[in-house]
Length: 115
Image (cartoon, rainbow, N blue to C red; front, side, top):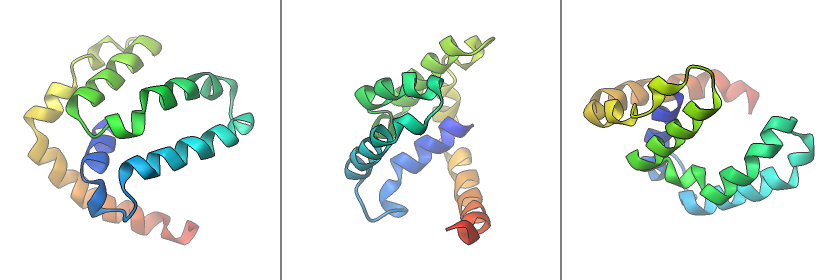
């Protein structure tokens, strides 16, 4: 579900943010790399793959979500059912989009005091 929402956010990025997604992603990769010494070992090992694979931009496509799900499926126990789940997203995109559009303002309101 998290990756489905990542897809919807990336796909519709311009509706939520003034900075273009490619520029935002590049800025975030630089920020993450500059602070990788603060990350847990497992995250530090994953970070170069995230940057090289440009995960933040590839989430904007169904194929990109599929690749991410397949990668995650290889890294987690009993992850095999995630492989191909991007087809569920594609088949029910309108329903997931409606749910996302209802969820996002709620979560933004909940975290606004933390900004």
